[in-house]
Image (cartoon, rainbow, N blue to C red):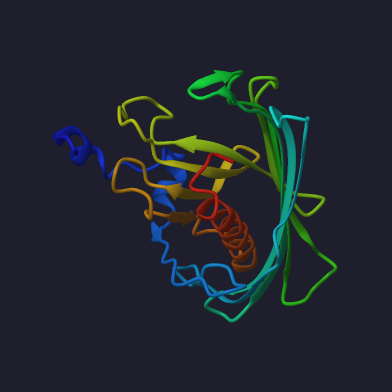
Length: 249
């Protein structure tokens, strides 16, 4: 049941740099539809997915004799084309790899169990390669590596680069500076280069009403090509976020 506090706080967004707030538009993301073998038809501002393809998810699992401990791996690949207002086209090829080690509770007698359910370690490696208008002389790459679990020290490394420029992709939330007391916070990422915020993505709006409140901010003073690269990178992240039940990457 929603409380008055939940309703009044439902409009809180992720905390981003003030300079980005002042120098960008708040672009609400329309998800469109997701056809068979396609990604969602995301659209925000002047940017839209015009075609896409999703490959089969390949999964393998192995465990001990009673499956009280298992190891699983899965890989999903997808690609899409995104255009902007001047008909530039970004081509994106992406792959999402997940490896997990888990413990599982075993029922040895009716209503009698041995062991427990526990995520020991989960490793997520996501990569997306972006080219503009078929120019393979400059390829941008988005790399995200996240490790979590009871047997692992939590790490989060994410970078968007063309080999020369390095844009750090940093997690942020609506409670970054405190003040958001909701049980479910708004979640997202901010793209920062040399201390300057270039772009931000909110993939979850928080609260009871935030599931589809996806937002993108892109700095107005950037080159149109760079804006498209950031829009394409944000869209690649959105695709895996929407299809993973909003889990923090």
